Length: 66
Ligand SMILES: [Zn+2]
Image 1 (cartoon, rainbow, N blue to C red):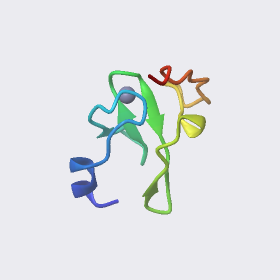
Image 2 (image 1 turned 135 degrees about the vertical axis):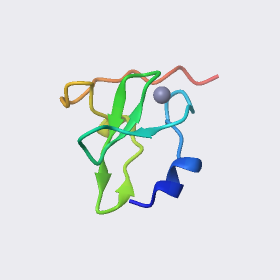
Image 3 (image 1 turned 60 degrees about the vertical axis):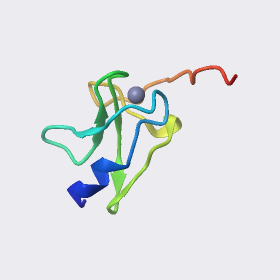
């Protein structure tokens, strides 16, 4: 994945900055401790697809909508 993407991809939950997760191709939100998989070069920024710190599926409760 092109690292320049990190300039504009944000976490869908907290809208914070994402980093590459060490040792994986995932994108990592340090604030939420969630990893978002990258599928064929496309980041999958869906809470339904997010992974927890151990790589297991995270059951994420989205923030309530205003
Ligand atoms: Zn986040």
